[in-house]
Image (cartoon, rainbow, N blue to C red; front, side, top):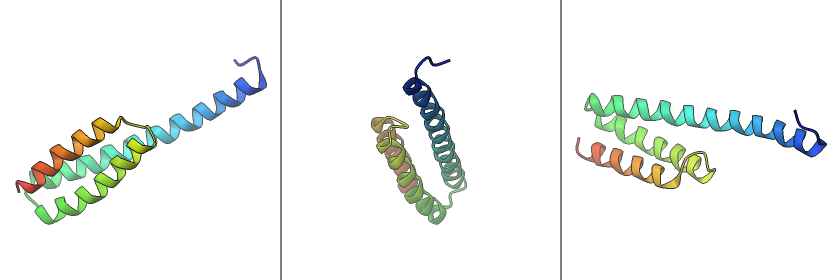
Length: 86
């Protein structure tokens, strides 16, 4: 346990941030799963709309530092390539 008031506050803030980050990661994974399902079913119109929302969520997570920006860029690029190939 923290010995100082500021350390106790920091510990509480860390718990809040960890919860927020895990929620963001879960949302991103859910959108990726939906997008990959649409790609596997060759549903181009659904895949294109999901790609826009997925890219938005991914970029926001990268800007907040939840995931690395290069990882976000790599995932976006690979999925865009798959959607355009439909």
